Amino acid sequence: MKAPLKTAGTLGTILALLLVNPAAYAQCDSRSCTGLLKRLYMSDSRLLIGIDGDLKRLSCNAVSDVYIEAPLSHPAFDSWHSMLLGAMLSKRPVSIRIRKGERQGECLVGYIVLDRL
Image (tube, rainbow, N blue to C red):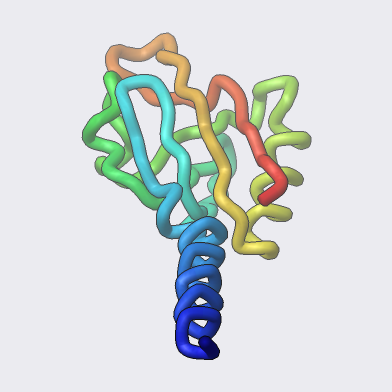
């Protein structure tokens, strides 16, 4: 009788780990990417966001095929920056919705979502 309970407990543990494994969230489609942040790269005019997932699937051109851009001049930049830092420190996945920029094919942040796991 103890063997089935032990097996059920082990399966439950594995399932729980899969459900909270942030790597399982890494995905991109034509309009958004969801995953763990890999790098935040700040320059004098923009923040470049590296996120898990295949950014080549986006309908725009990510910077060096690796980064989504958040211009420092955007009104929501300070909020985005705070959310991204919190997500990076807590190792939680974020969803970034893309908007096309003024330049041809430019990938810019439209909005960012951080969910509780």
